[in-house]
Image 1 (tube, rainbow, N blue to C red):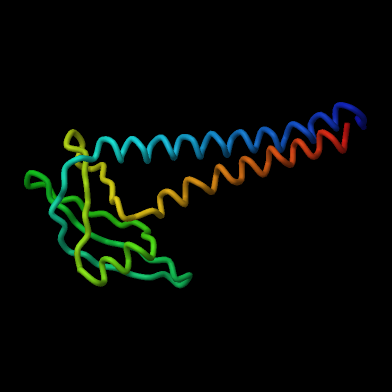
Image 2 (image 1 turned 60 degrees about the vertical axis):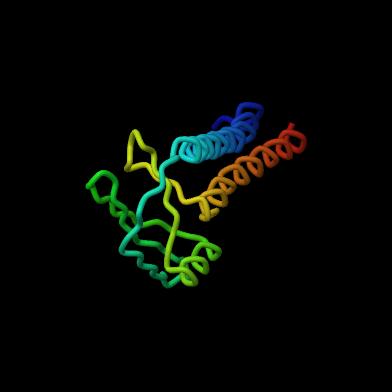
Length: 138
């Protein structure tokens, strides 16, 4: 049975590795969100707007949009701000990438921004745990 410094090093490196993985995931999600925000410049005509809720009170938006005769159906989770906006106006603004109309962005849906923050927060917490372990174990 091995004990001592090697086990301590493994105990310290594991949270750091997990933290770095979560930071990388958050970075890639943020990069994709910013890319969509930049490249989705054309506005689509949206039809068949339907909102549904899950048992956990999450809200989902089902909608279709048409670009050059091709119809795209989407189903995404939305935030309360967009939910209230759609209920009041029964419309939603969808921007799509003219070079790839399957890629879309909804400016009012900050749910994507919140979902990007989660991996960053987990990554930072794991790295802080790593620093704590570094000073208590070594």
